Image (tube, rainbow, N blue to C red; front, side, top):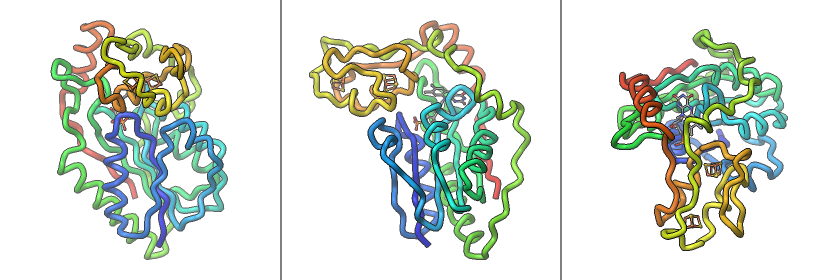
Length: 262
Ligand SMILES: Cc1cc2nc3c(=O)[nH]c(=O)nc-3n(C[C@H](O)[C@H](O)[C@H](O)COP(=O)(O)O)c2cc1C
Ligand code: SF4
Ligand code: SF4
């Protein structure tokens, strides 16, 4: 079996989950990082025996650029497994949204995983899922991969029964701009910046001006990719108000465990 493993991972946790699932699949794997604007906008059509998508949860849904990417995919009843990674708060409508987009793209959904990853806005002060996925999570992700391989080897292509989302998939169509009032823009600290050029290239929405390094506010997802790629700590992301941080930290205080539907 050959698998194509696509992942969108601004801050790196979703990528770790994708790699663990792939280890479990134990087959020839081609990884495609659809985080940068440039790769995501190259033509892609699934050619392997299995397509896997690993995606973070943003605002109770999948990131808009991933939804747009899935919306233009054309499968041929290609077996498809997805894994959503959320920051221990809520996964919301993300799995339902993926299931619907998969159906529209003629992808045959065979497995869905819901895993926890360190929250992008976590810090020592706001410890939200710090260190997740941990070793236990990654072992479960590998096991998920093994089970998918076994299911396909047995010729089973049934759609998994998923938990009823508390939110309808339709909510994913609603605008999701509220976050920018709660999370500040990762503006550049000119005293630390060496102008290495990594952040504009790695921004998923091309929101950073190559020359001035300023962020175009309406394009910024608050995804944290520019923070993660900067080797000079010239960008940082976090809550605008301590109160918001405390509320979210409380919501994510109780450890949640991964869920798998096969
Ligand atoms: C813009 C944004 C919105 C988020 N919204 C949610 C959310 O609704 N629920 C949740 O549990 N986690 C949320 N998170 C946390 C991410 O889902 C989580 O940290 C994930 O591991 C990030 O993946 P990455 O490290 O691959 O970028 C959000 C993170 C970002 C950046
Ligand atoms: S500028 Fe905004 S969208 Fe671009 S990488 Fe930074 S946080 Fe993400
Ligand atoms: S990655 Fe950091 S150092 Fe490089 S241009 Fe961006 S902010 Fe400056």
